[in-house]
Length: 604
Image 1 (cartoon, rainbow, N blue to C red):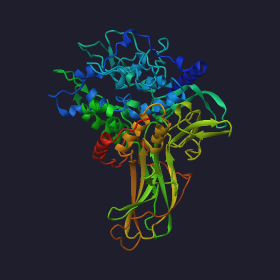
Image 2 (cartoon, rainbow, N blue to C red; image 1 turned 60 degrees about the vertical axis):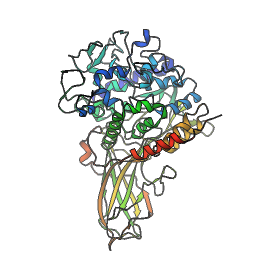
Image 3 (cartoon, helix red, strand yellow; image 1 turned 90 degrees about the vertical axis):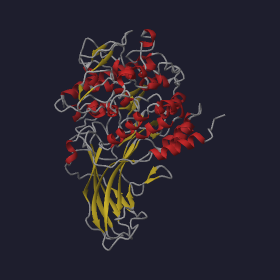
Image 4 (spheres, one colour; image 1 turned 120 degrees about the horizontal axis):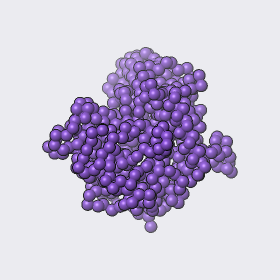
């Protein structure tokens, strides 16, 4: 075991013991409402933008690395404008009154410290002041650049309270900003160097989330002393090879890429030039979430004033997704007979430093598809098709789907049942997400048995291999292409309809459904693909790849081959060779027009 994993184990044990002993939201550490005078003296991002956003007389390409330009369109910068968050917030408060304050603690940490996370529905957020917003900017500039790292000043090895946004802030009327440079200065605020901003444990303060009120049950329904894990992204990374001190790839190595060259990070005259500064396009895989923020009527003014930032975030999210996984046709036939069965073996490799996919279980999934494409480009999906009419993955023949499913223990039936009320979850029903390289599982991150990721030596593979027995379409002919693909969705129709149907307090669920339909219903995004030519004999006429054929069963992947060229890729930093999802803007604009024109439904 790597030394850093041992440290992580100690940290996790400490936080778990603390949480289970206190067993409640009120006992979380960090800076709490009322701890600081004047709400903490936090600044709105608009004030930071006066110096840290590209001005009109500067090269437009600077918008791809300057801090505010690159942050403003991300889900981080819009975490408290997200219509999915607000719809889920309403349901969480219905299920567990007051739970919303805990949810807001992560989605707007400064709002929490300022005491504006109460009431728990977000109605306590401040109105729009002349100088700009603080609460609704979500994870804003001051969230990170005002945070301190002195959770235990007696032990420098434990500078954070990991998980649940237990962030620490000081009483500092001057609003001193912390950053990576030792020679920073500003007439508007104090400045100091804070190297720990680059530490992945800093990210782990929010990207490791448990429910302090509910303990995890084991597979037999017996409660453990472990708080229920809602999001284990940090733990997944910390228990992988990417956290190894000898070859560490940190969170920001992938999620805050470096620009190339000597560039400014301020727009003042004659600024200090920084070598390869990091951007603030802190994105992952939630491409549709950005579109949803853009489509929400309440965000119209903010979106209009940050169009380029949103477009940049969309582009960079696609790039992030398309470096997340690699797919290989391990075994594919060179010749086929129409109408006859054949076997194809596909390997999907996780290139990220956490599970693929990662984050909250609700709505996030990836899966394997195999298609046959004729010379004209017409294609039919043989396995892993997506039914646009239902919003579901076609189940016949079955494919491998990578996702986590949470739920509740049904005491009467003595079984765990999958459901979407995340504030009440106490069981991990399923977890078939692909582990990262070198993964060491814990009780909260253990893969379930539907897909076998075992490496045969007590560890886990960072890839899945599956054999499909399929049938060549009877009318297929000529040279065609077998295409193995990985698709990803950050939102499903099932979850949208759940939030709509379960919301009995306000209109947020119905408003979210309107946004979902106006933005194309979160279609699957192609993450990676691999292709191989196949000869079906004869000659293929136009449209020879038309209607779908039949398929067989997905295999267990129990005879893996060694990983290929993607084995040394890390933390999503290497392209997998897939094409992007294609243009979305036209469909989105059309949907927005329909959304604006539609009659708003209201509960009475």
